[in-house]
Image 1 (tube, rainbow, N blue to C red):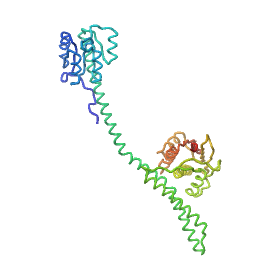
Image 2 (cartoon, rainbow, N blue to C red; image 1 turned 60 degrees about the vertical axis):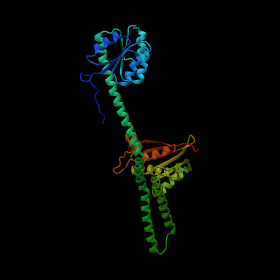
Image 3 (tube, rainbow, N blue to C red; image 1 turned 180 degrees about the vertical axis):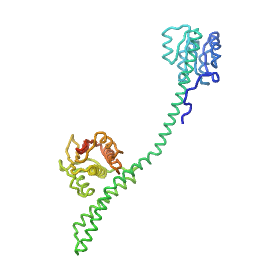
Length: 379
């Protein structure tokens, strides 16, 4: 929790500390006497002594003559600012010119007064500059506390980040496992029914049984890939190869969506990209599932070549979305489904980004949705 939430106030119990640096005894002691009723005053008869005092104590205000032997006030001011940037410095000189005043302000002075100063003007200046220094020190303390809290938060996030990513990967795993497991359950049931039928008829329809078994095998392999990806999420490196997206769509349609006739392909006969077949399967699975969940009866994946890369336009005639819903859905973590997770398109965008591909969404209520996937040229 932050402490010292209000600036320190000037009062008689805690007098602000003021340093007067002047090689002339009379003016130095006169100013010290004038200020002593309101401030704790320390004096120095040369610049080097004043700098030493500042290294030892946190002064609120320094009142310093510009013209002094050994080291003048301008050079001393430069040295003081390297030690303390928060105290206030008021420069005095009996040789006041506009150029001298400007020079002192450029080097970090807070105010400039002629010497000898007018007493009421001097008192008002020191009061104001002491309060300003108090405010700056208070703000600096807050900044240091905030920086310390920020560093602590960064350390905590850094320590917990692997667990956060593992949790995200686990949620994605559960999300993506639903479809292939549904396929396995469905085709396992068909296998059982076909086997019972074959037993009753006294002969086995081997071609049908082998076909069903092949689908179950491929769905099981996909589940294995998902589980392995989650297990090695912190060090997983996908294997990239040349992948035919047209063939992959056909495979996803057959294996994951029971050869659903709603999914159609047109355009190029083959469309090769450089990527991970496993991760691109996840992308297509999520896109087709979203379309079917939105009530689509027709889903068309159109393939074309644009700029040396592959463009895939996946259009459906589902319920569609308004502009705000589409924006939030594409970002991820948002769903309109009663039992949805909102992860689907977020997963797609993340996986496509890893392939250097982009994902755009165009949708309108009652007019379906079109997703545009643009892949870069193969290298």
